[in-house]
Image (cartoon, rainbow, N blue to C red; front, side):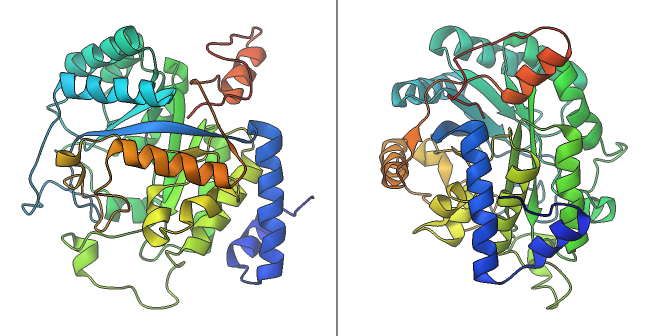
Length: 368
């Protein structure tokens, strides 16, 4: 099925509300997903290693000024235990996520990465915010495979309202995103949908930027504000002034991202499950997504990683989360992917450079 995906066509799909028309979009995205990354759903174990953050982002519950949460930082041994659990569940990747925590030092993170690669043998994805090129280089040399850094919105004015820069620092996110591939990382990014004053044109620009950055992973999710933040205290935006922060808009962005970036890994996110616990993740997987990130964060820390309130599955153990997600995937008739897999984008880049390097398993096992 061929859909019109020029600028007017993309804007038309973003505004589309007719169910029969949208079924065409879902079928097209699911077909492209099947053709390019296969029927496997790849499970990547998420470990929220620290909720310390020095930033003042206007929507996030981890922001430095939030005095209502208890801060934590996991030890290296605790992180290693989670990585071993990921391996035992059959996950090919562990994703280490945190706020922008200067307590996670260059050498400390590098040591953790080396230990995971040497003692556990899974791929390592880092999502630690805006860090220096020196840190990113050191972590890559230690063995980190992928780095996730969401640009959240391509609208610079809206971004500056959401993410005020650190005092004396200029915004560095886009520069860092463009530096990841030259450093040897698989690069991931993404956006939030339904930000205050976000327009449909902004979302179309986000999709254009996904293509420009040649991303290996694209994460899109609905905007869910934390009440103890400037955006949360401002109350709801006026109707008609922004795109809605809904499931439907998220599915449309997942589908369009798949059609425009067919080889990317696209997760069906926890935020979708927060809006629709019964089938949010499943619908994302049927509309272009191929990744789910089950949470391995120890129970004593999980509720403290409060980016937004009422997060789905906050009280589940890692074992229960794994059994629930694998059961749901099997009910869809999909398979569970094994191993970290090689990036189709990475293979293409190496071919363009005149050689091909396959780093892990044969095609079809995917990567995050």
